[in-house]
Image 1 (cartoon, one colour):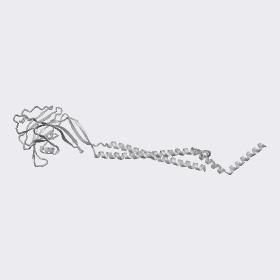
Image 2 (cartoon, rainbow, N blue to C red):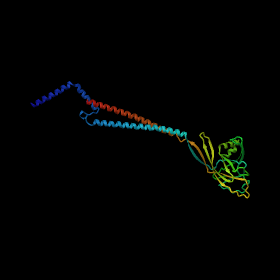
Image 3 (tube, one colour):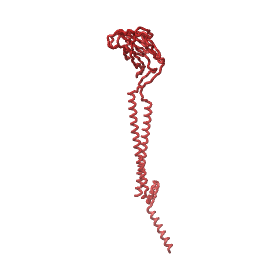
Image 4 (tube, one colour):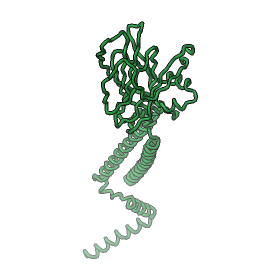
Length: 351
């Protein structure tokens, strides 16, 4: 009896379930579709929706978003730094173009081109002129008396380049050449009388005595030299020692100018003549200071190729940063959409 009652009860319950399914086939299909959607969206059943899995997923998504935003700001900062470097590089290049750097080079020579020494003695007379070597100047035998003139000299008259009225008389002497043998030129002048309290002889140096000799217009050549070179003085009653150095300057247009630098030392001359008179004696020595010719030119330290390479690297970094920022934004948008989709699915499932 009990078994029959159980079978009757089971069959009755089974028939009721069948009738319920037959009456509501649409709800069954909707339930199946919800299960499939949930399984495709990896959504846990209702019993586990209240657990910590959604909160963990939300925290991970939040961290990814925060990390993406931080990374995006970092690359924007790097782009700003790159733009600043581009501006600074271009500004430095323009500044270096406006302000070239002076470059000094030294060239060693064994022989100089013999310079020209132009004296303006006025009333003074050249007594002697000799070339000596190794700084050895023998004592004068008859100071104040005419001696040997072993130097190559020329006399020239020309008008003053600054007034164009006054005639000037110049005595041009060939200077020393052999710097290894320490060649020097020793000259002695004599001035019989003077109305001035101080007596001195003017002179100037120019780069090449041979150019003066080969010049067809020597007067014009001397006028140009006086306009271009500085003049100096040496006084009577002293032995003046002049050590010369040559400086060549290259201009921006490619031309080259030459000037002299000199170091002068003065030694008092003790007149040991038996009958020293009222005349004035002048002694002067010209010698090269060293065998180095100094060349000065302006150079631009800014290298356009280096600047172009630097700019190319900066622009590549900018493009790379922009591309990464674009991908980061797309990734953030994709993650946001996926998160919103999952939120809607969870909401629909709960509802």
